[in-house]
Length: 431
Image 1 (tube, helix red, strand yellow):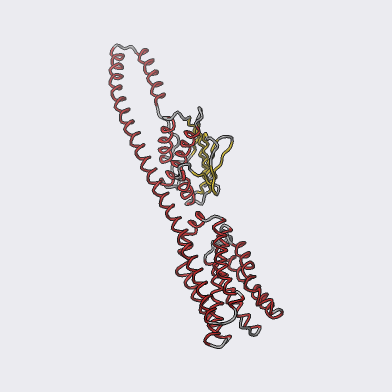
Image 2 (cartoon, rainbow, N blue to C red):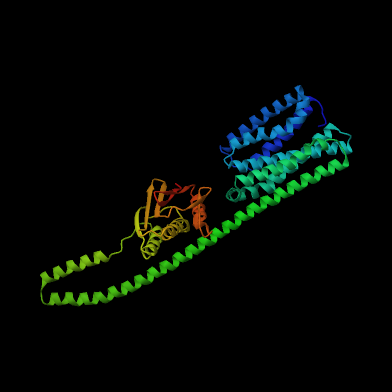
């Protein structure tokens, strides 16, 4: 700390607060509307700047020792309350903001002491330049990359890894304020620079690693979805071949029926003909294949997988009430229903119970589609972050379901109730 008047301290605090709050806001998905969020950030920033400047004026000694460290919890708590992200992700972003704040302080103070004999205005100028460079890089380069990969970070990071990253980057930043480094020397300056550089490089590499892992899982889910789609197409082709064979059989039988009807007409045996036609109509009605619902895509998917389940002696009960045309892509129906049904069949077979049941309920209520699937389960399902994990490590297609549901701002819920595995899905249809 190079000292200075109240207004010098006011400008220093202003630069630091702008850096930390702006960096956090750029990388955040706020809980509230953006206009309201910006107003809250401005009010908090002004209040914090006034408080820290008064602290500098009335208690300079304690300000020098504790001001930098107290900024992390003060700004961190506020940003966590304003963010819709998971707590550990918000903590990690605040640690990065504190690290960048430390870099600005280190550069400003040491450049001013090394070349300009501790000039206060040089310190302020260097801090402003560092702040502009960091925020420009964040806005034009890092922000898009981070926000496009934040879902991968949430998927891959857990509380332990988030805390570990938080502690490591904070420790790196704290070295800039370590008492032994306060005395100016080339050795201390180089040592602090190397510590900050290594901490920043390590965090950037780890961030890319998490995003890369998330992308790998995303592409794996896409591959599984394509495989499910191909499997469904093969099943549809089998159904079409069976339909063609059934049509050929019906054409063959119709010739015999026509000959018999002609025989009744020629002999004027109209009573016998009427009885025969009634029996024939009843037989046709019995053999008629009833559609599950009017929606063609849903009907095809459920028909194919219901046949697959029944071939394994699994009882399938379905209550489906959907309109014919819904603003849901066929590929999303496949991702949701095919994976859900495939998981249900897998759960029934894995249970080993003599009676295996799959019960599916789908209904549309205004602009919402409610999907519930209950299937026989052994009850030994492992959950991680509320999501079931496959015993084969394949993810059970759950990620594909969640991804498709997210396209409609929906929600998913997985659980085990009374010996049954329950999948609940809600889709919000666009107007």
